Amino acid sequence: MELIRCYLERRTPTCFSKLYDRYAPKVFGKCLALLKDRGEAEDATQEIFVKVFSKMGSFDERSKFSTWLYSITYNLCIDRLRKKKKERELFSEELENKPELVVEVDDKELLEMELDRLKAVLERIPEGDKMLLLMKYLDGMQIKEIAKILDKTESAIKMRIKRAKFKARKIYENLYASAE
Image (tube, rainbow, N blue to C red):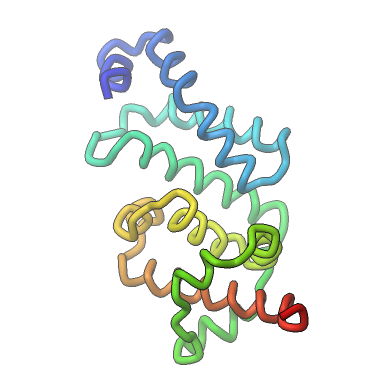
């Protein structure tokens, strides 16, 4: 927080440069994980820090800087993915309109999938669902934090995670039912 306050108070390039050096590798890693293209991840990282630079005055310290930065990163990457292609909608319309079809999937079930199989499953679910699962299970974010980042209610996030886990399990079953 000291660096952030330094920049907010003095607006010196040195303070922003130090912020960039500290957070750019993490932002780039998130962008690369989401966009799956090194060049596009580099461009996105630069664009994110331009936004951070221009919006730094609106950072009000009610949340952690990293949460605020993650929100900008996530939203920019999702926007880029939406522009690049339509989200794949495996079961989406059907599930969105019929929540009673969504069966609870235990977290343990997702966590026990073999890494290669899990990667294959994550490649096949819609990007928004993938991001929710990564935020919750890879980044270890709490429902409250995810809700704040996505500007949704906690109950909406819980339902979206429940649906994403259901989709992941269905895809897993379709891909690997015969192997078991």
